[in-house]
Image 1 (cartoon, rainbow, N blue to C red):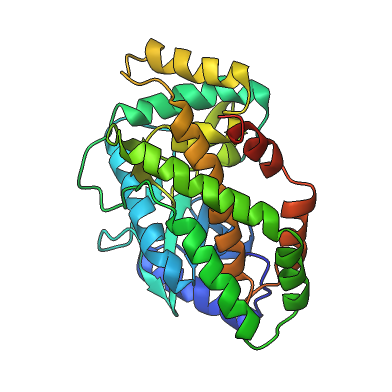
Image 2: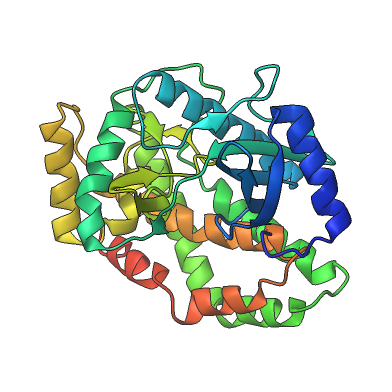
Length: 316
């Protein structure tokens, strides 16, 4: 969404809104090109530089608002690596502009990186978050179900009868081509959901994609974008690297070193591999009517990092 071109009239209106809401005089607003959902802007003001995120998607705005509340809670409890929110004149976290929700942060000069060497600091940082888990933060709780697969099949059916948009034929042909793989993952998801329900509980405050939002800048590390914060098992944060022996050991050792009474469970890692397989497909299809995701979907099936995660889960 953050690639949308805006004319000068929009920028001027946004500057006015920033002043009215935040008492910040914006001198320059330029695209920030950060994040998957929403528009993201770098705002240069008379007193500093800021990061502005605009979420126009109704289905995502509640998550966005919940993520801001999580960031505020973490900052209030000594966490200094999640971004600092700028509140409005009247103390709100997410005012409205047009049909969007706004979130303003202090700007951090940094690079969005993820590699093997960043896993140790990432896991250490997330353990600080796990230690602050408490109920009542206004975010959803995970469930062990096959709902992600069910929703995907519903989306696929709707796409077949919906008015054709750019890339729709390619999306449909891709799903048909990989239908066997999709069905296999749906069956495995259902099986592991049932197994995990037998031993539920032990939920923590999780990010969902900490590695994909790991920034390094100003001589330190950050984890940004808490839109998908959720009460969930820790495997929700560990699954993406869980196919590697060294990463599972590092995660477990880090949990133990931070006195967190939890050890990664194979059945939960497998559940999240299959669950997230469908989660990402569902996210692509939500955005596709507004921004053609056909090529992204094709790449997801043909040559994607998700393949190694499914291969690992198939061994469990």
